[in-house]
Amino acid sequence: MNPRVDEAIDDGDALRTQARVWLRLLTSTQVKAYDTDGFQRWLQASPAHKEAFREARRHWDALEPASRAFLQTHPGAAEAHRRALHGTRPDRRAFLGAAVGAAAVAGVAGMAVAYPPARLWRAPAEWGADDRTATGEQRTLVLADRVQVMLNTQTSVRRGAGGDNNAASLELITGEAAIDLPAGGTSFAVTAGAGRSSADAGRFEVRNLDGKVCVTCVAGAVQVVHPAGTRTLKTRQQAVYDAHALSGVASVDPASMSAWRRGELVFNEARLSEVIAEINRYRAGRVVLLRRSAQDSRISGRFLIASLDAVFAQLQQMFALRVRTLPGGLVLLG
Image (tube, one colour):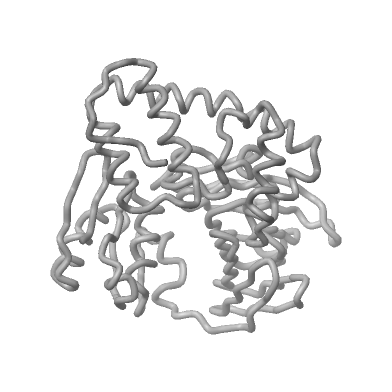
């Protein structure tokens, strides 16, 4: 069911109903580029539209504690959430049936919120995070034994300790983290998805997005332990894994390594759709590529995170794209 966005409806009940419909649509797995466009047009129609959507959001936020408690006391539903986050998706009807069984999520029946679009709200897995960063934000944590952890944009972590080797540890729920370990300190480990990466000294980075984890050794050595095997990474080496498989060891281009820590995004023959997805992690609003034929076009370049809007003019020239800027930071590339 798609909301009608071109009708001027002033009735408060009707607007609240429309806001709930938009909320359900945006959190479904069926949201399309034109839905994003339509939502922005609906949202900007009047202050009453914005207030109706804020009210729907407030209701959703109020459900969060009860939803979390439900997941803690119902292992079946919690396992469904876990599988959805790590790529092993259960039957959609079975997942929704477990979720809707709790009053906490009755108001948002019909949605799968493992990866909320445009990060309009936090995913269930992030509710227990100890530290998180907003879109475009970077933050450095100083932990015990002089361990420094730099969190990139849209990152959530949970602090902890333990493991088989009693190493201090951190769980990277989503996003990207860089770990700097002083010489002579204690071992430190990062759990992300199905794997665990640990080091005694040096620097390494872990990226966990959409069920895919990438571990990069910047300096020193990092051990990656996964149900599919173990890899030892040395300086400028990388490994990738998901819930089922672990890659071999690959070399890393020094120019792209730690680029985000220098305030840059570096791409080397990357697909245009991947470039836009990465830009959306750092920029408020949303960039939508409407021309499907351009999705696989390749692009190389180095862009400053602080001035990402300058990229659109380059994309317009490179791929003959039409750039349309709308309120709320929405940019359509067609």
